[in-house]
Amino acid sequence: MDVALQETLKGLFQTKLNREMRLYLDTCARCGVCIEACHVYASRPEARYTAVGRAEVIRRLFRQYFKAEGGIAPWLGETIALDDPTLEKVYEAAYTCTGCRRCMTYCPFGIDTQMIQSIGKLLLIGADREPKLLTMLAVKDAATTEIYTETKADFETAMKNLEAEVIEKWRSEAGEKAIPVGAIGSDVLYVALAGKHSIIPAAAIMNAAQENWSLSYFEAVNFGAFVGNPEKTQEISARIIDEATRLGAREVAVCECGTAYRVLKHQIGSQPFEVISFVELIDRYLEAGRIRLRPGTLEGRVTYHDPCQMGRNGGVLEAPRRVLRHLGAEFVEMEPNRGDNWCCGGGGGLVAMGEKDFRMWSARVKADQVKATGASVVATACENCHAQLSDLNEHYELGTRVAFLSSLVADALAGRGRSHPGG
Ligand code: SF4
Ligand code: SF4
Image (cartoon, rainbow, N blue to C red; front, side, top):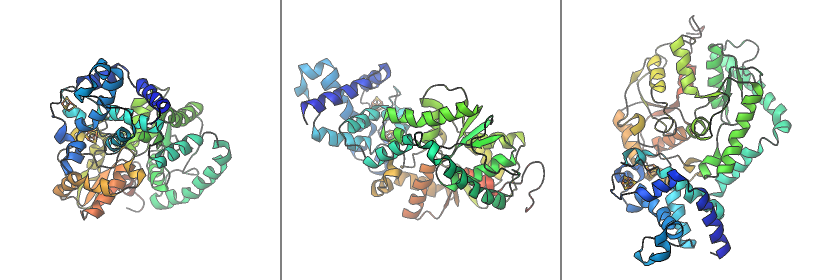
């Protein structure tokens, strides 16, 4: 690695060194309490798959370039130079960690491994060694702001075509506009993912609740966050913030995507509107009697997988359980659950990167957890988790059905204050 690149990477490292990060890098007592917390280690007990082992690569770089011992006693083995072999270790550490932050809840100092690994991800971008697919997707997402005026009409036509499905499948009470787009003065701006599975059930539910809502022109997913690019993360978020502000939306409801929710709700500062997860919106409708569900549409035993970025890291823990209770099925908790739940093993960009081998063996503990519930349906509220759990279901022959909460609710819609016409 040439000196110029080394200097660039040191500069990038420096941008991450705020007070909190310095504390995380300085404080680790190497007590090992976090070791068993990582699903990767729990599935394959090797030192490199521990939270502390992964962080050590970044800590050694920190000591080398930003602490006195780097210049005085590098032979102690506590430091490491920024070179090509080190970047390979950085890559392995950063992309075998899903950023689930389960280890953080066990650490007596609350050290945030995901935050430490964000340094590694930034160094990889600086060295042009990050997963290129993630960068490509982040650039594409950020660019939708520029091509918005060209694609607006096509998007509106596509949504118009979907409206018939909303009305036909769930007998929407929407009247003329089953999927309103770009409506000024909407109370709720709903931000979906690409694909009708993220739009049709949500539209049916909001219409049944007679919500004054509008669909965002933009996708919720934030690949800038997955690849660890702070600028792209901001740019991708800014599209939605600008749109919500322009439309005067009171609330932005983020679809079932844990990372999109956490970024918008917790990571990019306060906004002139509230941010809510779609699951919380469903919960609100049910509790207020704005929608009713037909009992008995969901048969068998149901369990719920708490998505890390929505549950442990986003605080949405009880709303999904209340929603499931309304469905009236036999509910069984995974053990452990809520903030202590095992990660599905697909976060941090791993599902989007497509590679399956690591995702399957590193989530053996998750598959065991699902199996132990004996559930025939695994409900969740995150696209990544849904994809990963579906792969695990097939790989480990779990014999379950993985379902989005929104889709279970939409299938059971009984309308508002009256019986469902077909039920
Ligand atoms: S954040 Fe999750 S995947 Fe990463 S080291 Fe901690 S427990 Fe393991
Ligand atoms: S639990 Fe915290 S202090 Fe102990 S080894 Fe893990 S990160 Fe370090």
